[in-house]
Every structure is written in structure tokens, then in C-alpha cells.
Length: 244
Image (cartoon, rainbow, N blue to C red; front, side, top):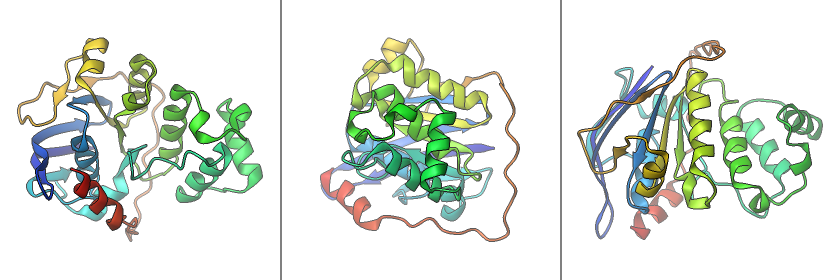
């Protein structure tokens, strides 16, 4: 499965949020998409996932331009102001909500079992804001790929939280090894520290994605006849544009 965006741009009320940017990624591939911290990271994440319509360019998933298909197949992880959890919530509450979104059992027992499966039982009662950065990012990513239709995972600027970039980069490689297509947006400084050639926000000429060797293959999600739209948080999207 290939996600391809060509020269997508987003105009804010006072200035561009995202200058023309091209990026493509397929199964078993990882792309670092670097740029100056700001609304461009959120704009490109929402655009690539069909949650914000670009003002220019196009986005295709295996040739399909449908926003409904993008929203079903492309997931954004911990995107500021959009999918990041409420910091005050206990970890077990966040896990329960995400399991419910994924169509999984989400009662207390199911939550405890999921946390135990990932060796995170000790964090169950902790406020989400107190999670170690590496645990936070990995936990949210693992919850995201519980959704059976998700094939492309976008981590939005995990370096804004601090911590070691090598940890979330290895998480991205792990997801790619499991047949996901992965994009991680980050600051230029993180890309330099990782010594990885990064794609650039605001550029249409990009380096090739990092190819990652397959680990244990994941089974193809069963196709469903009817696509159920994921609600788009229009008010949040407008707030993002207003902040640009």
C-alpha cells in the first residue's frame, strides 16, 4: 500500500501553514519528515490522513483520493491539539478509550490485560502527563495499530516532548518491520542527531524512504463493504488554522 502526496499546501488565515510538500511511503518503509516546529507538522499530518483538505496538491492511497479511505487507513498518533490525550486522565482511561475506538473490548479487565500484555501494568493509575516520554509514544502507537484497518501510521513531532529521538525512531522502524508505512514528523535537530536523511516540509524533491526488513508479517485486514466515517473535529481544525 502506497501513500503519495504531491505538492500539498495549506493556507492559514494570515500566512501559509504548510508550503508545497511532497512525500510518499509504502509498506515496510519509514520517512522522517523534518521541519521548523510549528503548525506545518499538524497540517501535514491531518492532510495526509484525510482530516484536513489541502488548498493545493493531491493525496492518493493506492491511487484513491477519497478522504473517507484516507481516514480509515491512515492514523495520526499524539497530534498536538487533535489526537493527544488529556494529560490529566489516568493511563487506564486513555487505554480504554482507544481500545473502544479500535472496536476491542474496553472494560476494566480488558484494559488491565492489554497493559499486562505490553508490560505496562505499573502505569495504569498514573496521570498520562507523568508517563515517561518513550512509554507515552509507544503506548499510543500500539493502541493506534489495534485498529484493524490502519495501514499507515503518522507520529506527529514526538520530539516536542523531549527524550531521546533514537527511542521513537526505533519505534518507527519496529512498526515498519510489521508492514506498516510510517511517517514521523520532527525537528531538523532530531534528524541531524539521528544521522538520517530526512524529507523536508516545504519541499517537493525528497530522498527515498528508509526500507525496513520485515519482522513477523501482519495479516491483511479484512475489507469491509461499507466505510464508516471517523468524525472530523472541525472546531479543532479551525483552531489549528487560527493559530498559524
